[in-house]
Length: 497
Image (cartoon, rainbow, N blue to C red; front, side):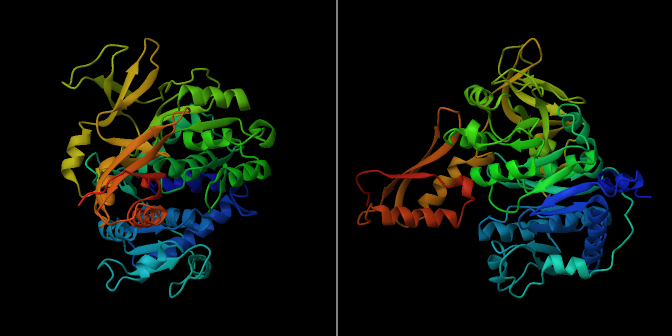
């Protein structure tokens, strides 16, 4: 008996139904069945247990998407441990923060994140074991794939209560604080029905692909929770998700459900003769989330490929989408209606309900609400209020119950589907010795896609040429996530002393 362990929902029941030979994942030309995935997860559970991981302990994954990382997450679920998948591209200081904040006993690194950990003169006290996953030189770290293959399977699945934590997912607070949202086993299991089944009709004949990686809450559901619960097959792409590479994968692998973000859809449409060049005939459902899908971009996509993406609004605190348009709907610019099991209220700044057509802050509650923020009771009390999540999103609702996004109550904004704070980017630039003033602006193109423009004034004696701009770009890349680095830096005339 596994109690409420979500592993039973994701894997065990498929084997019990005699569906172990159905495909679960395809990666770089190889197919992994549900039976093979169960064996890999049992070996991964054995590896984690041998490393000292127990119920409630954290394992931190700082590597690209792969079947081994999926198996490791499932292995953690089997143990009643907690899986944390974070961005391997994070600056070195943030990687250190993640290790310390999670108190992770096991960390998985890639060629991207390994150098930061290898350079530490002193490891965090909690950290016992590090494995290397992916291509490149592993250095002194053992390879995860080989270690899992050599480990005897641990057959048991730990019984847990429904409220027991299954995973942490990191997000930004409005003040820039890094916050880990805690999601429970029952929350993950409950997340499948409202959107994946009710809105998309996800089923075992589907083949799923997600632009968003596992370290996004959006991607974690798209590539792990939703397809496994449905008995579907998922395509994993460990590398970068540039337009040409991904669209070649679509042509070759024939996904039926494609989870994207507006920035990616805009990128597809900018390729000359996109409709003729890209074969998307296998895709029955395109999904868009992570940032605002403008009406103009939605219309362009429909004019090119014949259908509107399903547009959704969700949050890390709620795990996934809770408002979405219909699969074959025709309302560009709309967020759609509530997914089953969710309730929403729109409140004014004074906390009073607003009428239809008026802008209000969106509060939501539903079956897959997070437990709260790890280590941050004040932030938890401010956002998780009596069973509701205060989202900070401003929306309007019409008489039919459809919602339209109108903005934020705070300084957070989405760039390439990821949260960004302008003041953090400005602070980073101002901390460079060559910069005396810095302002970062949001630039919006005709499709509603946001980008960042930095304007800087240099100290007296600093040359304003391309060499200085390159230095500033390198400086930011070492300290900020890629989406927070402005695509353009403009040097203002006149220096300051």
